[in-house]
Length: 278
Ligand code: NGS
Image (cartoon, rainbow, N blue to C red):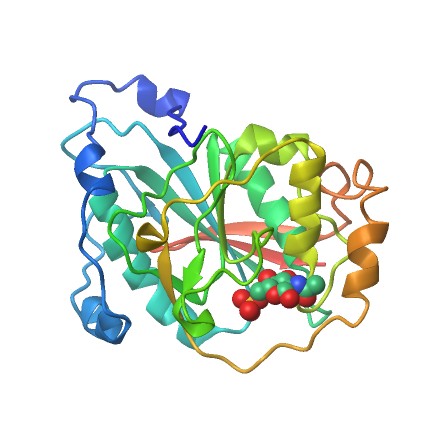
């Protein structure tokens, strides 16, 4: 059931003039980055082939089209590390991908769930069948960690250095999660009710399980990440109540009812920026 889910965007499908890309070599690549080596990897960066945060392999026809969605506010130092690192990492994977940065511009409490819902609407509009929800402070260390969707949602960041490479609880889906766009729509996306730090991902995990969507993981030696350090965010003291309360109202709280907001899309070389005012 962790079979890779292949469905390329219709637009790319029309230009099928190259042989299909191969993925076995990537999945079997044992190359691992030492977290301390990450700054050196970033120095060797050129944005070649990247435009509007998007990349298409030159020599083969990609079988995966993946939207990488990053919610964000006021973490410039992390972003400066994240973007070059991710393009270096992803360009080697023979996939078609695009990085979306969804930035909350107002000073209201951070609402990661709403930002994801807004970003996902754009990605679906751009015909991406596979979504990867990605924290800005996590960098993948294993070359074999293919950024593609499996048939079941896949929790990709099971093994993080800051958490001593241990999965802290089994239903964790926070950090990095790959999910098919149709499955994201089926569970009605994220709740809008979680502001500040924590809980929105646990609530999302309940949404997945109530739709009988089983979360899978690649083996640990393919799922290592390094976490960039930052000051802790203020935690939402209501989050534990909200997690269970929201189970009952999931069908009216989420992607189908994104709260009123202003947003605009701007193209940068290394990312597509969605600026949001809630
Ligand atoms: C849990 C949070 C999750 C969070 C996870 C990992 O306690 O939202 O820790 O966080 N749940 C609640 O607060 C209810 S981490 O250690 O990676 O910063 O994703």
